[in-house]
Every structure is written in C-alpha cells, then in structure tokens.
Image (tube, rainbow over all chains, first blue to last red; front, side):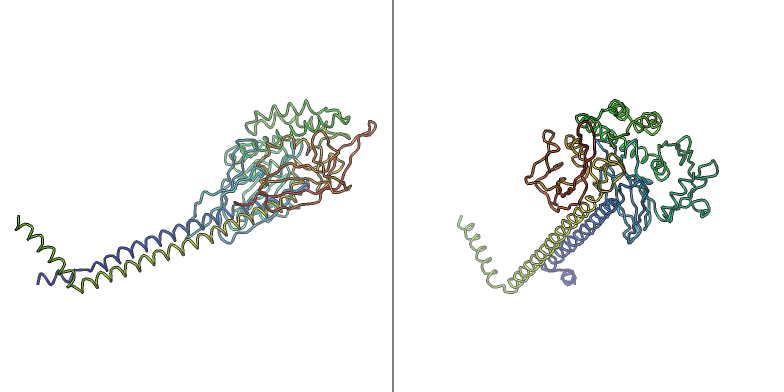
Length: 308
Length: 195
C-alpha cells in the first residue's frame, strides 16, 4: 500500500523540468509585457508633452494683440507645469500624465523649453485646454506669455477696466467671461473688493490669490498673475527678467554698432543701469523699483536711431 | 587485496549490464532531452520575437522624435522672425511682419554662445537673396554689411531644413543722413536629427 502511494505521488523528471521551465518562460513573458507597457506609456507621455510644447509655437507672433487657441486630448489628461530659473534663461518644463486603468500614470518624462513661458496652476486637469498669449514688453518686447487654462474652469472678470473687457470680448475664449455671463461655479476675478476668488488692484498693480500677493507691470503680467500660482508666476518672472538682461545687452551692442553710423548711443547708460538692476532681480515686489527706469528708457527710444 | 579489486570489477560489470539492458530508462532520457530542446527552442523563439518587436518599437520612437523635431523646425521658422532677438519691432518705422533687424542679428552673432540651446535647432542662417550677389560672403564685424550670409549657428549633424522669406533691414548712413534699408532674404533653420 505504502509503495503504491509513493508511486501515485511520483512525477517524472521530464514533467518537473517542463513545469519549472514553463513557469520561468511565463514569468519572463509577463515581465517583458509589463516592461513594454511601461515603455509605451512613457513614450506616449513624452511625445504628448513635446507636442503640447510644439503646439504653442504658432502662438508667438509679432502682433500686439492677444491670440487664442485650444487643444483637446483623446482622454482625461493632467498637465504639470514646472519652472526652473537657473542658467541664462531658466527652463520651462511640462509633464503630461494620462489615465491608465483609472489610475494616473506617473512617467517623470518632461518636455523642456528655454524659450517658452507658460502661466498656469502647478497642475491642471481636463480634456480640452485653452491657451492664449500676449506679448510682454519691459520696455522692449521680452517674450510672448502663454496662459494655459482647462476648459472646465471658467474665469469671470467683474468690474474690469474697459480695455481689459474689450480685449476679453475680442479674444472670445469660451472660459473667460465678463460680468453678465458669470455663473456660481465660476472663479471670480474682481477689480473691486468683494467676495471674490482673485482680487486685482489695478492701481497698485497687485493681484491677491489664495491669500498670497504678487505684483505686475502691464496687462500681460496681470493675466499671468491671475492664471498661475504664486510659485510659477515668480519663477517665470525671474526667467523673463533673465531674458530681459540678455536683450538689454544685445541692444547695447547694437547701439555701439549704430554709433559708427552716426547714431548717438544715448540709451546705453540707462541700459547698463537696467542690466545692473536685473542681475539682482529676485521677486515681483522689485518691479515697482524698475518702473521709472523702464519708462525713461522707453521715452528715450525715439527718432531715426531708435533701437526697437 | 584480491577481494577488493574483485569487488570493484563486479560493480563495474553491474553498471555496464544495467545500462545496456534497460531500454525504458533510455527512452525516458530521450524524452527529457526532447522536452529540454523544445523548451529551449520556445525560449529562443520568444526572445527573438521580443527583440524583433523592440527593434521595430525603437525604430518608430526614433521616427516619432524626428517628426516632432521636424514639426518644431517648421513652426519655429515662421515665428523666429517675430522673436525679440530677431524682429525689427518699430525700429524701421511701423511694426512689420517677418522682418529681421540685421544690426541686432550682428550683435546676436557676437553673443550667440549664450543662446546655444535656446531655440533647440542646430543651424540658423540668413541668406540675402535680393539684390542678387555673384559671390557668397559670410558676414563678420569687419565686412558687414558688404556680405550676404549671416550664420548664427552651425552644426555638422543637421537634419530637416526649412526656410522662410523675410525682410532684412538695417540702418544706413549717407552724408550724415541716417536711413533704413531693407532687402529680401531667406531665414533657414535646421534641426539636429535624432541619433
């Protein structure tokens, strides 16, 4: 009986070998498939991030007015907006995350651009996104600022100055409304004190949002402060000032060259002063101290020898 | 001594006999070998299929990267003339579309190292096409504006090339009188192809 039982449990070596190797092959196959899926997700995310960046190219124009556009993803998407302010121009970084099996896939693959300035919250989510851009001048054109908002978030501008209202009307971006079209769920942007999510003090050139204050110069930076988090705003502003520094140096060299042709380099001492101030620029509060210098430079850039 | 060696001989004999006269075990060994070879063949097949898939996948990834770079170059050439480092602004009267300030470009040429990776393109060249010139002269600070090619960036490994027609404007002087001079040029950019 005992011998019979032993025989019953006995598995031939051939079977044992086949089972072990079979299991190994199945595990290798599963491992390989998981790796390939991860690779696909990473590649897809990297490609989408890059595409978002490239889609922003046509928004940079030589025109004065704001330009709007939109893009739609095939599925719910998160766009993570990151900013670095090191080196000569800093870095705009974008990471796109999409849902897989109802879970956000984190890939840590970013598209990086030195020549773009995207103002949005740290991360925004949705399928359709609106983008509009506006040139920022200080005193010459520094860059086209890009404002990125999800279609699901509506901003309602209450008591805005007439030129801002006119601009928003001309822009005709569906998620940017002016007082008549506001609903309860909208993010209220007020230009007078009241029960609002964002308060803009147009005279003091200050925006209050999430109990934090930032300062601006010009409408382009005002929109930037409205649509972005304080951290993103301050970082992008520092990047803009770094580019301003390089452009100031470029205009100084141009002025020196034009001096040979008979144009007096009257702007150079002011540009040198601007470069000096910009090299120590830290945050938006310092914009106030640059305002008069920038205004003076702009006033002096006239006549046949104007630099920009 | 005799006993010991005899014992050894007997053992050897026994083994020989068992190996020659047990055909069932031999068939089993053959089966195991067949299974092993089969499994190895299946594994090798899987590996080959996997490698084939990876080669195709990485090939298409490289293609995607190249297509994205192409898109970037194509869209960039249209907006590069509007970038503050290139554009005329209001320096030559009113604001102009696709107008490049040649004086500013020469200043940029002297400072191009700072902008090494700014536009993510490998080559930027501005070629004067009208008035037509017989020879090709690269611009530098000594011969400008008596030249017709301004090379801002140059790389050996350049891929897709795109160009756009632009107005190339500069300030000129004539007997203490300063005036604007604009000529027709081509802005040529190319990106570095994916490796």
